[in-house]
Length: 448
Image (tube, rainbow, N blue to C red; front, top):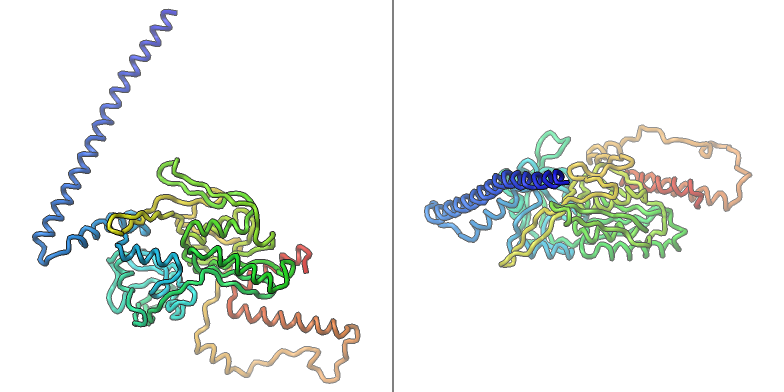
C-alpha cells in the first residue's frame, strides 16, 4: 500500500515537472507572438505617419485608414470587406429590394470582376450580360489590380447615364464591349406563373420580400388553376439567383419541407455553430418539385437547392451552381460604416460543404446558346425544306369513324399543348425539361 501511495505521489510530482517544462516554452511563444503583433502595429503607425507627412500630395487621413482596413479584410477572402457609410446604406437599401445600378451580382477572380449573375429584368440582363462573364474594363479603364469595391464604384453612376464594360466570355475569341444605361433596380423577388399545369416560381433574389412573395404567388396560381389537384407540380427556378439573406433561404426551403435539417453553419469555434430545422407544413402539399439551378445560382440559392435535394423533396435540374458556401456577418462600426466578415461555412443536410464545389444537379441539362440573329434570319428564309406530311393531308383519305367529336376535340387540344411545349423548348429549354419531368412524375403517380 505504501509503495502504491509513493508511486502515486511520484507520478504527481513528475506530471508537475513535465507540465512546467512544457508550459514555459508555450508561454514564451505566446509572449513572443504578442510582442510581434505590437511591433507590426508600430510598423503600421510608422508607415501611416510617413505617408501622411512625406507623400508627394496631401492625403485624406480618413480615406487612408479606410483603405488600410479594407485591404486587411479583402486579403482574407473575396467576400470580406469594409463598407463605408455610403456602402453600408446602399446594402441596407438593396436588402429591401430597390436600388440604382446595372443589375449584376459580382465577385472577384484572378484580379478581374466576375459576374455571378445578372438580375432578371435589369439593364445588365437586357444588354446580354451572362453569368461567368469577366469584366476587364469599365469605360476603357482596366479593373485589374483594383479591389472589388473599387471596381464596383467605377460601375456606379447616375440613373440614365451610359457605361461601357469590356467583357471576356468563354467561347468568344475576343473581348467585346457592352453598352448599358444605368437605371433604378426594382427587384421583384418572386415571379409566379403557370406553364402546362405546372406552377413556375422564379426566385430572383433573397431579400426581405422573398418568402412573402413566394407564398402569395403560389397561392394565386393554385387558385387560378382551380385548386391544388389541378396542378401537376412546382418548378422552383433559382437560375442566376446570386443569393441574399440566409433567413429568407431557410424560410423558402422550410416552405416545402415538413421536417429535418435545412442547413447548418460552422464557424471557427464549435460552440458558434448553428443548425436550422424545418417546421411542419408544406405549401405544395407534397406535389412533385423540380429545382432549376445554373452557374449563376449562389449562396442562399444553393442552401435551398441543397436542402431540397438532400431530403429528396425535389429533383435538381440544370448545371452546377456557383459554389459559395460561406456565411458573411455584417457588423456595424463606429461612424455608420460596417464590416462584412466571413464567419462560417454552411453545410447541406447531408453534412457536405459546397464551398468551391457547388450543388451538382441530379440531371445535367445545359441551356443551348442563343442562335445569332443572322443565322435565325437565314433559317427563316430557307423555304427549300419540305413540310412534313401526314395521312390527313392526303386527298381521298378515309375518315376516322371510331372517335366522337369530344374525343377528336381532346386530341386536338393535346396537339396544341404539345405545340406549346415545343415552343417553350425553343424559348427556355431547361424550364421545358423541368416541366416534362413533372409531367412524367405525375403520370407515374397515376394523376390526371
